[in-house]
Image (cartoon, rainbow over all chains, first blue to last red; front, side, top):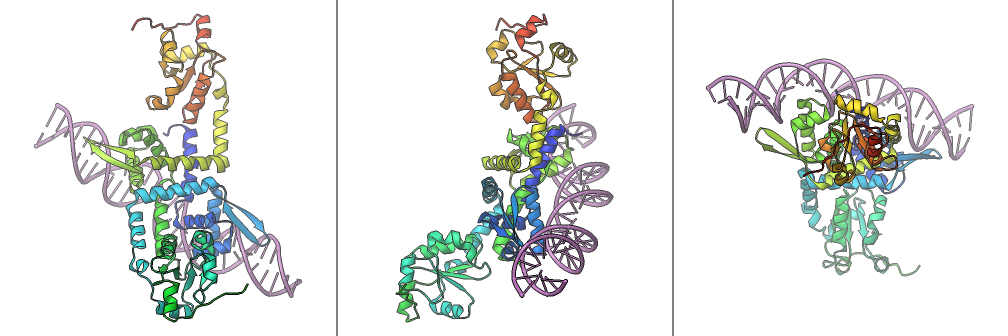
Length: 223
Length: 223
DNA sequence: ACACTATTCAATTGATCTCTTGAATTAAAG
DNA sequence: CTTTAATTCAAGAGATCAATTGAATAGTGT
């Protein structure tokens, strides 16, 4: 009934790639792998899937040739099998963003949620930080961070943020701050983080305003 | 249980694109649409699927935003919804070709089948052409074609072959010829055609050898 | 040898996919 | 208005998929 067997078989093989990318969880795993080699349990924790389930999805990705694995000690490390896989993924995102109204709406809604734009008041942040319910990041250059920063704040200069995403807990809300209300660093950081699925907000004001309110500041003079 | 709902939803949307491309028949339809707008029944004929089945696959492609349709008279014409869709498809093929051993094997096997490399003897071709069991194409430039060609041969100069594929019946074997045994035109044409799923072979020798065997030649002097 | 960790395997359930069949639209033609 | 052609819709059988659970395998440290 069909045309040529060669063509038929060939397209069925192409379809294996599509099939591997036909599941949201697998795509999320691919995204994590895009940042580098990861073990199964690291991926399971990142994605929130069970280990067994993660393992099975990874095997499907491997059978489609999108990832490869190697064993190191008791861990199995997976990685994407080539740059071209990441390019393919990027194109898939692009097509989705351009042609799926749902995606456009999701992204718009998410970036424009009230708490994405509204800054967190200083007192509220201090309270939440004390209870460990928030990750505070300082997105200014390292030099400025050293000369004074919020207690408990981690320094991740904006240009390095993308590389250090893996160090952040995706479950925990993040509050970013920088120099002050006219500084765009924290704004950009929040945008980037929210795009990657983190729950990020901006501190109201910056370090100078924080000092003005007589709130505690850590100063690292030595070392 | 999962991470952030935003991220989760977003990846599920991306997965819709993958799902649309997770079926060989749909990919074949996409390939036909890559060449231009087509009606449902044209696509059904090209793919060998039933009309109802074709229609359903097209609707899945449309829901994923990969194709759009418009109604003209009693026909519904489908087309890919943008260049980016074709780019995505091209990347998918590339990844498949690079990372799936099956694909490499398929393509190799197919291009190296005995009848892909072995030329068709002149007498055999004449016999098959008389019975209408073969499409004969002359891949030399139009000028050379006009000054003498095989009876029943269609002139499709090699550079134009890719654009004229749709005019060829995929079910019927094709024999290509050119200037002679040292001319690569017919060789390249066979390679291209077989890559696209056609059953193509080369004529043994070329037009000069054909003449030498005293076989009939059509000459177009006027017009 | 023993317990421990990381990963995979196997079996199950409920959901989704493909294709077929036959009927329901919708627009043109007689 | 009836017929015809092109497409879509609806329902059902068989296959495949996702997630869960519990067991099996393979390295590590004691």
